[in-house]
Image (cartoon, rainbow, N blue to C red; front, side, top):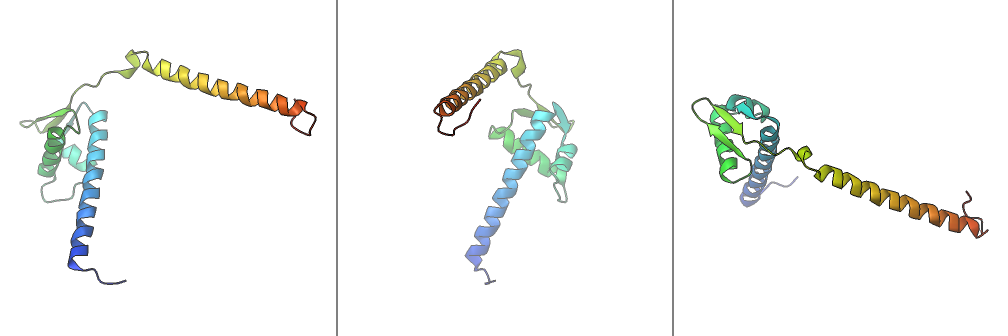
Length: 131
C-alpha cells in the first residue's frame, strides 16, 4: 500500500467524519421517532458516543439536528431530556388503505394479463402452456 499524502489523509478523515455524522443523524432520527422523551445520557448510549463527556456531545448533536430541521424535537435543558414532538398517526387517515388498494389492483391486473397471455399461447397449439 502506498503512503498517503497529507492532502489525501485530510480528505480521507473528512469523508470518515462525514460518514460518522450521517450515521449519528440517522440514529438520532430513529430515536426521535421511537421515543417521545429520552434522556441525553440514553441518547449518548444509543449513539455509542465515546468521548470524555458523551452527554455534552449528545446535547450538541441533538441541538444541531433540531436547528437544521432534521428532527422535530425540543431540548429540556434543566432535566437533560430530548422531547420529540408528536407525529401524526398515519393510520387515522385512509391513506394506508388507498395505498394498499392501489397495490392490490396493480398486482391483480398484472396477474390477469399474465393469465390471458398464457391462455392465448396455449391455444395456438404451438407447444405453449395449456391450462
